[in-house]
Amino acid sequence: MPKKTQPRFQKMHVKKGDTVQVISGKDKGKVGEILRAFPQTSTVIVKGVNIRTKHVKPRQEGESGQITTYEAPIHSCKVMLYSQKEKVASRISYVFTEDGRKVRKLKKTGEIID
Image (cartoon, rainbow, N blue to C red; front, side, top):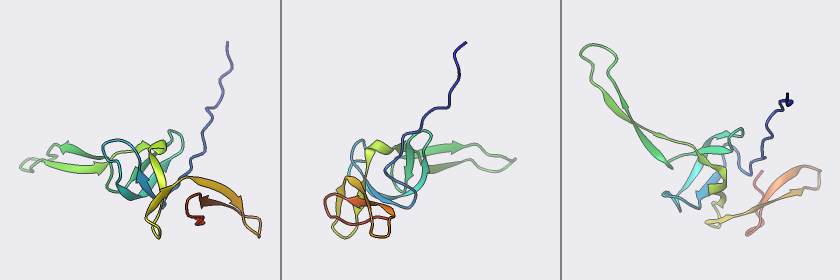
């Protein structure tokens, strides 16, 4: 019988609170903040991106149903970190500061994110 192992999670380049730009899909070009990140599935929820509608049935007698909208998750490879100052999306690199902390840096602008 094969030994069961834990799945390996790929480290995501974005985290909650980051400002990102969508680089592919129907919402390409939209800029928003990451509301939630799911490292297990490498997906993120971005504010105002990938809007879905849900039809909610009435719960009680006499109550009317409603249609609600919510943001569905998209894969983290479809987003790029976005610089608010320069208004440009960029790849990132990991660098160490003088005090030894590992931080994320935008390649295009040289801006430190963390």
